[in-house]
Image (cartoon, rainbow, N blue to C red; front, top):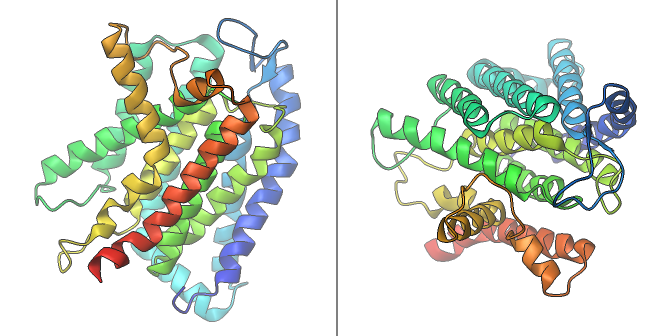
Length: 332
């Protein structure tokens, strides 16, 4: 990982995991009191109201981590070399992290309102567009071979909208969305750390720890769901972390690494494309839920829900691992 101590990445991830493990039971109790729950109904397999504590638990854990990180850097609690690198990275990309956190909070609040009051698809989509546009306008954009700011802006907005809805769609079984997100974020964090992007890597490993800490409450037997607040937060975080990592360089215009995000996030993207095509073929609105997701089809093939989730996790881990090695293989 260049000259940045990898054990500090691990420490941040484990710390995030511990904080989330502590905060999630608190949010489960609060969700019940606030009636932030998912009630049994059509296409749902649970028989009792389920707390939607995933979003609040993950976001509050991120807040704690950011505060701890700022204190550690400002008071030089970390080794001087590490503090210097992180301070330099903060001065360079601190504004992007601020935008990321504000956008994540906005997506979380949008999903939270939907959890509480059930927004219409048009209003929810408008909120997603607003968060994506503000993010892209701030300068967090996908760099393409085509040197056009307008195209890069539009592609970034489309990317954030796509991933937000992809993770919202894939949140249909216990542990599926949160587990796939953890795997994808781990791969993004590893990629950033290998290329010496200290701040993006440190933040990504911390976000990974948050999802890892929530996972025992969501799988195999769920004590809490992510809810729309959690799935919106998840999709936005994954989308922006993928954008913030540098894959493209003006001096390396043909690097296959630029395709890494597509490979790392292939599982939710393929599921989204699959479902949307089926709904168009059936002449149904693409935003109306159904049981045609890949996970549902595996269950109909005879897999148990738990095995189905594990199989999809394995596919995500395989594509993430492949993303690390395939550019070097082809370029050699």
